[in-house]
Image (tube, rainbow, N blue to C red; front, side, top):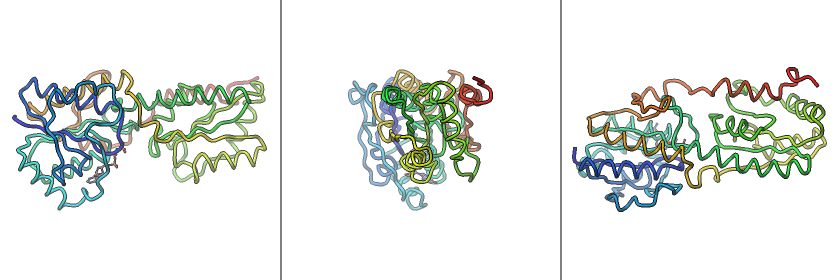
Amino acid sequence: MKRIAVLTSGGDAPGMNACIRAIVLTAHRNQIEVIGYRHGYNGLLKREYQPLHPGDVVNIIQRGGTILRSARCPEFVSTESAERAAQNLNDMHIDALLIIGGNGSFMGAEHLGRHWDGQIITLPGTIDNDITGTDGTIGYYTAIDTALEAIDKVRDTADAFERIFLIEVMGRHAGFIGLNAAIGSGAEQMLLPELVDDGNAIDLKQIMRHVKVTREKRGMCSYIIVITENLYPGGANALATKLTEEMNVDCKPVILGYIQRGGSPVSMDRILATKLGAYAVEAARDGKHLIMIGEQNHNVVEIPLEQTRSSKKPLDPYLVEIQQDFFDLVKNPV
Ligand code: ATP
């Protein structure tokens, strides 16, 4: 093996740089050249690339974002695009392509794999943690900490004014950030896609009853609801307005938005990214193809790419249960 390529695709996630660094350093140790394609799959189509040497990855382990830039590339779904990408990769004599991204990027990897003979290895890089086959994804741990830091601050002011706050976090299809942010912040209630039955609207009466009774039982106090984006029509803003009207008590929305994507990666993300990045190069060197490199129970695992979306990754049922039990109105008598 002489030359590999790497790209970052889809939503950026803290730790992508740490992963690129590990790939470059491990490749260098194995006398393999590295080419970095810029702007996700767009770089493959437009031949936008740069050689990556160890000197290019100095002091990036602590930086959020991605030095290769990331992007969506809607046109990549076409056969013509995949064929063009394959031709460009062949022209560059690339033996293996390493793709750091989320579920969509993995579908792009499979798509390319149907048109290119080189090896393809993916790495889970997304704050959403919605990839089956790995316990965590690169960027997820930082996103939780970012949400927690913000919610802790909101809690201070909520407490001072004995107010109700709705905090909207990312994760429109998966409640991993929401669940962990709720547990870590001690939020009184969480509204997550997995907990709202298919097609059922959020039960406003139940929410209001919970707010009212919890505050009565525990003394007038602050009350925090963590809600994932897109769960309620109009989002947290609309739900806060509705609750304010219905309960006649001030309810404030806070939308965390893109700050959850940024920031210096926490230790868990740096270490995960480094471990998976180094392993991915070794797997490429050993001829592996169409796999994701993930982590289960602290061990690196190789998962066939198609298995990463064969089933929906579940939330930790024990965490869900204890968050609900702590604030269950029946299980917590006065
Ligand atoms: P995140 O969930 O963190 O935003 P992601 O990788 O899931 O990351 P997407 O926007 O879903 O982000 O996908 C990234 C890119 O992957 C798309 O812009 C497109 O280039 C490619 N892609 C997604 N789905 C497909 C598909 N079915 N076929 C080919 N390419 C795809």
